[in-house]
Image (cartoon, rainbow, N blue to C red; front, side, top):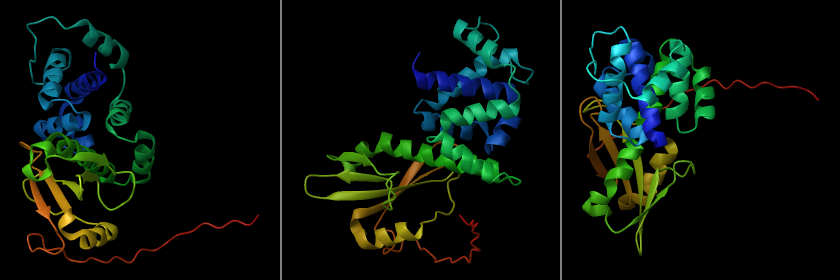
Length: 247
């Protein structure tokens, strides 16, 4: 079975077993939001995750009947046998390992933020960002402005944007943002803002929104100059803590 579908099946089992508690610990408000964000993050159809959840429902004590009238496939039975004894913390860590793009680093960063709801919000922000990036990769070729180009993933290069679209004699820089709701606020780092100012019409913010129902997008060109988005500068004073040792 395709690796992504195996991951989707495991998420379906997780959501069936832990139900709304599982949603809460991952930071989601609804199953639809979870299907959309997790599905895009894994590059599988959101409906696949829902179908897998429904397949596991007859096994677990939730209010849904699921697919109780048909025998369970053997690979689902094998998954139950392997993972059913995991508690919610162990299972959640496993789920994060398969959905985080850089699980070792991301889980380490998350562990430092384990204060109140910070951990849950970190998970949601991270996976929403991944989902938005995948949505862009799935969608950009259907947008007239972005046709006839090749794509370069620059998310790990720290250059102030997520993707570079290369044409014969020019390029576009694309910064992708994700919003769960239809409206909300987006943030640019100082570097992103400076690069946008420098590139002007070659810089775009691609906002993927409404994951809570059905994802859609808005495109903003030259975002720091044109008035569609009105950015306000926010400055924070941060106390820097250092640890010194003599050798």
